[in-house]
Length: 155
Ligand code: FES
Ligand code: FES
View 1 (cartoon, rainbow, N blue to C red):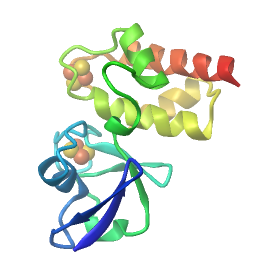
View 2: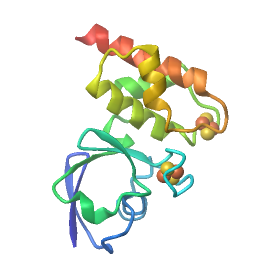
View 3: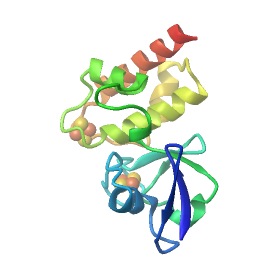
């Protein structure tokens, strides 16, 4: 058994030590926000936050997560009450198929937690590991900038 802390709640998970976090989130905890894109650390659809850092959950063995804080898309808000970054993506309608968006939101969230007022260049550099096959990049960048503006207003 491995004890995982996800979105502030502790879970006892029965999994092989090298099971990717993504599989545990989706198959055992029914947290389906993180998506399986490539399974190879190349697309970012599976991005979650671990101790403040964005990570590819498809590559993260669950055994490395004891005592660490995992945050998933579900930890940021709900459909009824989206968090600020989620709300900015909705306001900018920053999705086509939407498959990449949970990972984009989590990477943006990690950036804004560290740097609430990033420059456009910093946003671009930070979001670079996450891919969008639909070509929604310009809306995604606008959404992150909008969320940053909101963060500035709140401070
Ligand atoms: S599914 Fe993890 S990086 Fe693509
Ligand atoms: S909106 Fe379809 S992959 Fe990004």
